[in-house]
Image (cartoon, rainbow, N blue to C red; front, side, top):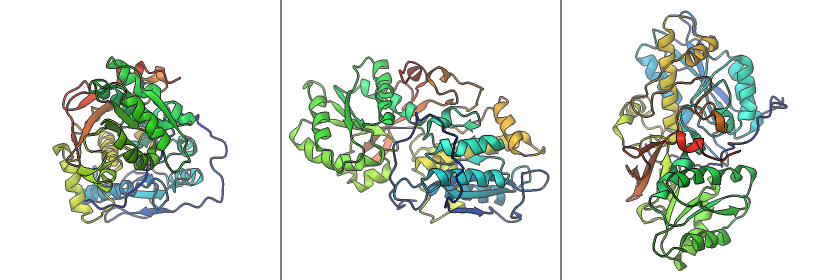
Length: 441
């Protein structure tokens, strides 16, 4: 399922302070569409008691000029159809509502208000950069947020949030740990902003854990159209040690492509360096569009949350896509958003099976998630559970329960498992202890 439209990813707002005022402004324009998943679903049915369908929502931005994640609601609808085609969960159907947050804070709040108005029992496998806008209405309605993309700090602090991955903090810590074993000097190119200020401590926590010196911090304005001076700065520092190949880490979100245009020209006059970055700044579609095996990312290390799409542990997800969404190019099995949605619905299924024949409400879903439930995802993540405060509460991430990171490398233009250099087996490492030592305050 390739060929989806290339999308851009903005730098996550991990460290913004929650803002509640003004989140529910009237007059917002948001494209919110509810779709029934499977036959026998009664439009407008609420909750999930008795024989009523169990109503949930998935949201993501679509058709915008910035980040787009159309595969996430499309994956949610495919999952709902699959469940319903196989008898439902404990005999009850899933009804999947979807909403477009338009990459807009007011629209994100409107999606959350729709979820509350529709009495959904959970928001599942969604993407939005505006947790300041959507978490307050969800918390007010008691609706759990299961498996967001890990794109904001609120997902790792809000008590209604049940994340399934470690977000940008885990990715950067894992990348630093991997590069410590292979790189000479490391140069980090990141935004000159409050959000960007938090990236060096995360990368450096991994470098320090591997016994490596801290990275050169190369600041880049957010609104420039070329990065020649930043490219020269990063290359000068990365190539200072002639005995060991240096590494350059662009962490510019949707501006990474623009940086690479300048970087490819600048690197011709410097010794060879290795590229490295995190999933979100680069994915398989970006690698393809920049030349594949002959492009600038060949040989690059890229950290992600899950095994590569070629791993057999994704076979069940691919089977569902083929059965229920064959030919839907929005659903790319290699997309981390699609993968996160699959895992989030795996969690939802485990919750509903635990509730059994009891009433399915937002409150019963939340109590089940918080009541010691342990969820197996078939090895795609460690077993998931959400205590009141996780091990990383001391560094500001009390809801971050899965700090696993996979290390991938671009070989012949394809992302494949690197399997080494991250401190674990099969290219996977747990960054919990590394993040515990990160100076992010």
